[in-house]
Image (tube, rainbow, N blue to C red):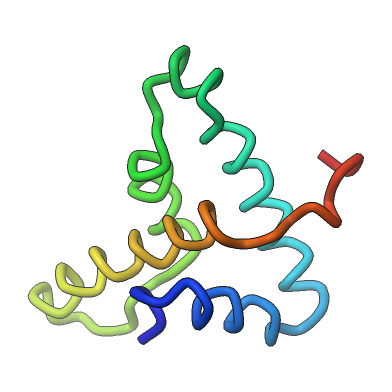
Amino acid sequence: MNYDSPAAAVSVVLNLPHINKLVLCYLIRFLQVFAQTASVSLTKMDVSNLAMVMAPNCLRCRSEDPRIIFENTRKEMSFIRLLITHLDTSFMDGVL
């Protein structure tokens, strides 16, 4: 439900249990490094491409209805894209 609001997406992450939040922030920080202009020029993987590839690894729809899965796929990609662009992972500096 929080795929179109940066503040809501960040809030979801901040309300995760501590270890889950650390793991997700570590992954998002990693993706943020690859989303920088210098990396994108080499890899051709911009924020949207990174989100498309990583969303299925982070979020799963529990439905077995292909129509619902397809609809949720776009929302999942949007959610990850928001985290890559808006989540403050500066506290991870030095870890990655």
